[in-house]
Each structure stands twice: as C-alpha cells, then as structure tokens.
Picture (tube, rainbow, N blue to C red):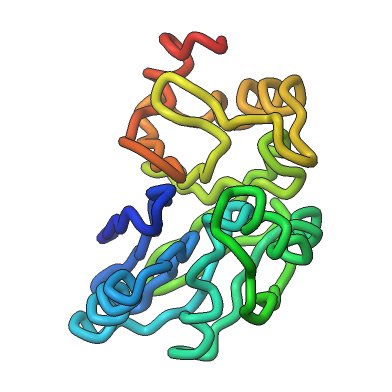
Length: 210
C-alpha cells in the first residue's frame, strides 16, 4: 500500500492518501486549507490517476475537516465518520472563532455515511478495520490493518490526544488505548493526526501516559 502524507493548514494536520496498484484510494482527514494545499492534493490524485473510493475522518475537529468541501466540489465524495462527532461539524463556526480562524462563512460539510467499528473500509486490494476509541472526541475512530493504524488524535509519539475540548474524557481515552490499540501487533506503524509516526510497541513500552 502506498501512503502519501500531506501536513496541511496552520495546525499541521496529517492528511493521508492511501492507494495501491489498482489506483483506488482513500483520503483520511482532508485538512487542506490554503489554495496551494488544495492544488497539491488535487495534483497528486490526478497525476497518479487515482480513483477515490472513500473519504474518511478519524474525528471531526475543525482542523481535520478544512478540506471536506473542496474534496466534495472536486470529486462529489462525502466524508464517512462516526455519528457521535456530528455535533462538531454543527459547531464549525464556533470552532473557527475559538482557534483564531475568524468568521466561518462556508457550508457545513455533510457526512455521507456514519461509521461504526463493525464496518470494513475496502478499496483496491486493501481492507481497513475500524476501532472506536473515544476520549479525544466522542466519535474518534482508528482505521487499521495488520501493518498500519491511522489513529487521528488518539495517540501520538510520546503523547496522547488532548481531552480538554468539548466531549473529551481522559480516562475514557486511556482505557480505549489500552484495551484496543495496545492489543494490535507491537510492530503496527502508527500514523497520527499530527507529527511523526511511531509503533504500537514503542508507545505501549515508553509512552509516559502509560
């Protein structure tokens, strides 16, 4: 599987494009904000003849949703996310102002499908299972297979997601990481919503929160 990482917008969200030899792909957390970022994402998809099968959100804090309307305008693809985070989309104007992005004057993105951890994401020759790991946000999802886990803001190298935002719960997050993420293979590569990669084994052994 090919994994392309785009650190987008002032908060440096990692947007991921996953693809394989079939040219089918998924986009995880489209966070493109500036015009050049939008062009970069579009060029990568078009230049590589990729066909988008799914747009996925690990969660719906505003910085992970900044490119949703652009992706829909270009490809008519709606995001898929957990229903428990719907309220965060509804609060986009408030999120913009709270984080210094000024007045929100766009359309509120629409969720095309609500996901649960019983769903499987299929594209090309790939399949991603889902874990629901609330605590950073009520609807935080992890998309994973035997080699990789795309965890959003649930887990970082040496840290975990913040829990001081609306809907956050520190104990719930810690319990979910222990009972779900840490049951994956120690060699599983962790792709977080911000910052560098790590592994499940590294975090289970050395993350100071555990």
